[in-house]
Image 1 (cartoon, rainbow, N blue to C red):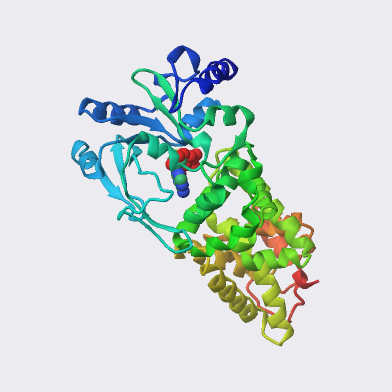
Image 2: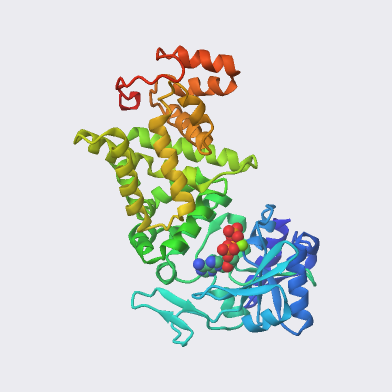
Length: 444
Ligand code: ATP
Ligand code: MG
């Protein structure tokens, strides 16, 4: 179908400027595949005399046979006008104002057509001397809106009512070639919004598309611009990059294009120093996360973030212990320092950084199972995550003396079995604490 559509499209390419209009019989989309919410929004806007299209990732994904994550709508109605039409709606964003319209349980993102960006000096478009866009709220028409989108495959507009597809930037051809092509001059577009570099990687990993040569070339030299992006926005991007079922591919692409070091500088330094354990550990963490996401299980960002910073925490902890710090305190300090430095880049909310610390701290406590400690540990809310983390360390080649296996068996055992396991540890009877310092196996 896509082939047929491209043939059609190639004929027209020479003939006209402006959008390539693809009529119903020449593309595989169907109005029924658009969510109810998006259709309602488009139709309501049109009924009130506005233009409205379904646009962006959902059109791209549907053409690729994927299920869109959500639906975006573009319109010539202003945010205030959109607000008036939909009772359950609100304006969000400052740098880039959009309207969230709630239809049932669905949230549809509605964006007003933007004006072209390059070379304009509109008061609603504010940029720094380096070209960073601080505000992009100048409104325009659909042509200018298409021109300010990031990649050609993201500038496809679909009209569910007449079942027509509009290609403004040659995105259909790039979709067929499976290549990400930046609209306009890549370097300028990345300078305007450095997050577009991360988006290139995200779509590369998620769609399996090549990041085209022109799109890829500026990346290594411009990665430092990510420091200009608000840490809170980078946290949102982090979630999209790593929790979409393609974390491993994303991680590899980020490193290949020299972007990872600007997101996780300390982790990147560990990897650059040849930390083989970190290599295996992170690859394993990403693989496990992807497996979980793809099989519909829940994943918490805290776990993956704890993994991403673990090599940093361990390096620091070992150095502190080398200076005579007690293990528990060394770990606490190492955790605080690693987190503090990371927060300069990515604003990890406390609801995730606290569990991260707990996962790390439990790595010290899981070897200490004597008396009723094992039972106590098992009852902790963070036990499961800490246990999974422990298994990950072992799967990555760390020798913990079979600790993970012990905990696996312990969880499966009945009460008598558990008691026997604890006693077999060679410690005193249940409840008695002996204070013989044990060499931590994880140090070996
Ligand atoms: P997905 O929803 O699968 O993550 P998407 O392409 O829909 O991918 P969104 O972040 O939902 O991504 O954005 C919707 C559309 O808005 C994009 O397809 C693109 O056209 C445009 N867009 C989003 N972010 C940017 C940006 N930083 N610069 C330029 N255009 C953007
Ligand atoms: Mg989207």
